[in-house]
Image (cartoon, rainbow, N blue to C red; front, side, top):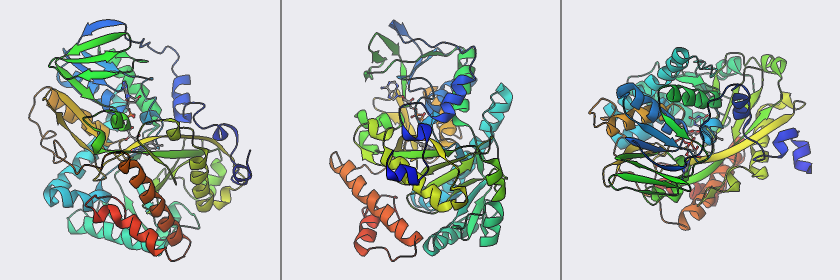
Length: 480
Ligand SMILES: Cc1cc2nc3c(=O)[nH]c(=O)nc-3n(C[C@H](O)[C@H](O)[C@H](O)COP(=O)(O)OP(=O)(O)OC[C@H]3O[C@@H](n4cnc5c(N)ncnc54)[C@H](O)[C@@H]3O)c2cc1C
């Protein structure tokens, strides 16, 4: 143990990030008494649709395909286990897009921005309905989303976001909260004024991912876990090649999230960035002491966002704080002790009354940052490949919508979903490697320095502020 880990009261599995699966996934796997097996693919098979990736995007796509065309033969190929990626590791925030209005309006105009927000709202409700209908206890709780500013600069940003919702005619979706109102929901000494978005539901993400896996299998979808797709020949027909077999199908779906950095069709559309979560020991009495009993999801307004929520057994899961960019998905996304410490530092700063409560677990994963901070879904050349990408760390609700859109595109249906503005939209590309990762790392450090200076009442360094603003100057909808 280092002095830093001791000072932060990091204990147990928090000291070995990456050595075990996320706490969420361990809980979900332990609850699977008679789990259905999904052995690796051996041999050559045929299907109507082959899906690469068994996270939320791949599984929701399979689910929606079984809803609209139950006779289709759908095969999912997952290199790990379903939910082994970020879908089983994230913060479990299924959140609305009303705070994304600025970017949405810039990209699509006001009417389409509102349409997109409403579609995400529907997806949040649909996730809850799915859980009820299929007996998936993923702890779905629609308790809303609280924004708590931690610096005067962030209060100004918060006011802008609320104003935009009002101006667009949706004041009920995002409303301002005074400092007292924020503290009544969660009494952190760091919180100032804020806002409340009713579109916010928490889930236990791994229970949702594994529940989806069960439901699609019951509907006849074939899943092969432990099956990496080493290449995909578009054809048509598409041929997914794996170490011990192939799947030949007229249509294929790339649902690989940040692993898209390894796919030529996708790599210029994203930067892979790590995010880490730390988890306290159960401390329900401490959670009650600060009045955080309403189940709200909470985030601050830092550009290097922090996000936190409670669990059923009275823990706090706290994410964000650092992260690194990389040109390939390697151990830096799962084993980075420094990133764990940065998340822990954020937690200790915001929740000093928990100083005696150990942080006993920690895990990380990759997020697929797009150039617009928003995902796109669509069709790739030569027309039989489909994708969803660019969730930018906000994919729990959008993956449900992505699955619906892709299922409709795969079946050639013209629906409200396929007419959404983010379908088949070309986004600005990132520079090629190594410029992309180096640039991302430099900008990210500058953003964190700026956020931290503002939060601690210091004047941000002018050079750091200028670097933090560079992406926007270059036409990307990222950064302050
Ligand atoms: C720490 C962390 C916290 C987050 N918190 C939130 C949050 O609170 N709210 C929110 O909305 N979003 C959050 N996110 C983002 C969210 O988890 C993702 O946007 C979402 O899970 C994306 O789902 P997906 O199915 O597209 O990707 P994944 O879950 O990553 O699934 C992709 C799958 O593809 C598989 N795969 C990749 N390449 C291959 C291949 N060649 N062959 C076979 N399989 C392959 C991977 O193993 C993986 O299982 C967070 C992410 C992280 C890392």
